[in-house]
Length: 70
Image 1 (tube, rainbow, N blue to C red):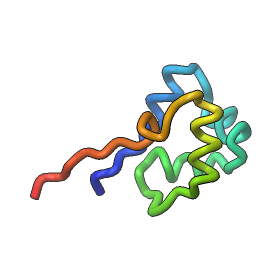
Image 2 (image 1 turned 120 degrees about the vertical axis):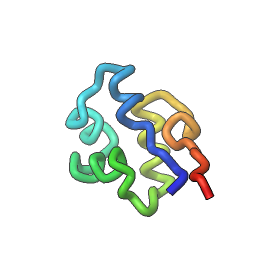
Image 3 (image 1 turned 90 degrees about the horizontal axis):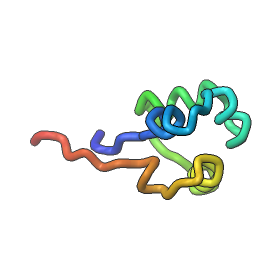
Image 4 (image 1 turned 90 degrees about the vertical axis):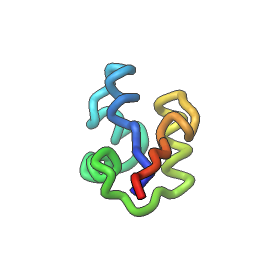
């Protein structure tokens, strides 16, 4: 898939652990791992909003489009 989730980069830049992040967003650490590993098939807008609020960022900072070779 051409959509990459940049949560790991954002967490590292902010010195935040997965556990702290998961608790602040209101999702399980397992679901954070699903997002980080690119296995998520969908993200609710309410979850994306919470992620952006906690990380003080924009949706484009969390999700990045990387074209795949044809």
